[in-house]
Length: 209
Ligand code: 5GP
Image 1 (cartoon, rainbow, N blue to C red):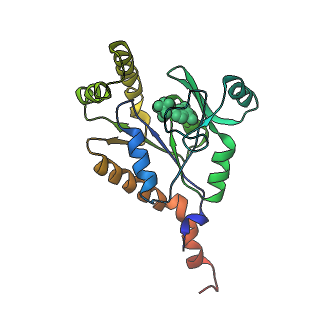
Image 2: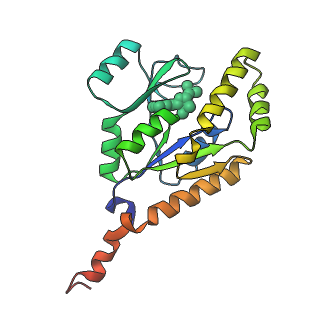
Image 3: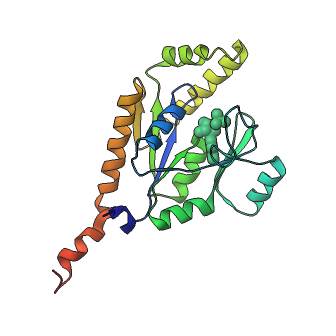
């Protein structure tokens, strides 16, 4: 029996500075059958090689994005690295109503907006082991020039300065152990009494076996 059907879906919001390994970690979580669905965002950025529309993102142009903002279709949206990103309000509301737990891989600006509208959300910040390792990982990609790397490092400092208000801080020193910590967070949050109080019904209803 799937008890998840008896409660609202939980929004698990994950943020991290670029280079902390968040994308791989989120993929690990989705692939490890923990009954979690990825929220697919809308973005105005170009599709990268291998990405698929409707799977990685919904790729839309800036005018369409702005129309969606004006129509109130986003639960949150933000400009990140010069592109617009947003989470559909309708997808979030449908998932929470159906008891589907969602993983939102979004930046700190978006996470703060979700936090003010969905107090029951669970906010997880992924940290690199230290700045030296973060820099090593950013340089290790071998795709960016020095100015881009310095810009990303500066952005990372800004993102990390927001980490204090998240519910959980998880250091990604090893992807499997970071994944296990997040799975432990999911499990504990799903058992929180304010979410599972319905389990008491059969023990308190008179006349029921
Ligand atoms: P990328 O373009 O590399 O996939 O993502 C760039 C950044 O945008 C990442 O930090 C990612 O978490 C963030 N992001 C992706 N989708 C959303 C979204 O819907 N809202 C916000 N606020 N940020 C997002």
